[in-house]
View (cartoon, each protein chain N blue to C red):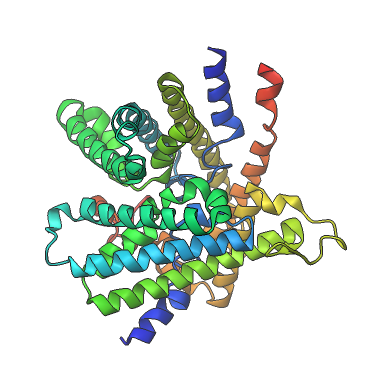
Length: 196
Length: 224
């Protein structure tokens, strides 16, 4: 239990996927314009991250590792994620149309989101158990949501600012992201302080 | 357009990182030193050239309906090979790039060029495009890496430059410095091109591999 809490805490705050590990920067910069689309995108990411971990972890441990095919990891994982996203989209459309309306637009964009592939590979690299991996994926998704929501708020304020023409648009957003990232650096050491 | 134009196009006019703003994740993550940036740039360039050539060769074989999974398999194959090569010959760079080597697969530049260019053009043109885009990517990563290493550690390629004269600003080697330097570089490009470069293709939406799926790229209302 303590270990799971430690993993969740560190992946949400200390090693935040977006602001510290730089995974999933494209949706972070692209979709954070409005709060509701930021939340929708993050919801889809959390969903796919957890699902991808549930599926890829056993494939690696029970099929690739025993047969000495570790080097196929990248190819297998990306194909599994791509087909999983398609499958989720089709089944959501058929069975839960309400959820499809809010998450559907974002699903095709998630295949090429490096945060999803990143979390599945990290789970293997860090030698987590199955349960730990799932919670790591969940935490990574929640960290993504946190960064997106905070940044959507920041961006709404930037819209009203009088920025020099050179810095209008993407440059000002990147520099705002840098300041948000500084604030997340303040969490380093929090996990050791609480749990050790 | 001649082959040379195609190469020049990728380096300057349509620089994938600084003008089209594609592939931001590796640009920010691995550029803590000039050598890391260069290593990542060359690895990505190798994958890009090889996948562009193969996809261009296979363009009449691959059915349009299943093209994205096919492209992904081709790209992932080359990424695995490049990973092996790095591990064997430059293990130091392999260790410091770490997770971002397998993540070359999901670099939007590679899938974007496969979809936008290689699937429609001849093999030689695709190779030239791969070289140009790859050089542009490498140049941008090298620039970022050099600036961050110089300001953050006072060194360049590991050689001490100003570290013993001025105290280095470590923050530039940390994540916030990555965002800051990238923002300033994009602003610089904005300034030189008087704002034309970025506005034209903001976030490189038409180059997005999902442009067709989302169907909003032409109307310019893509929210990704």
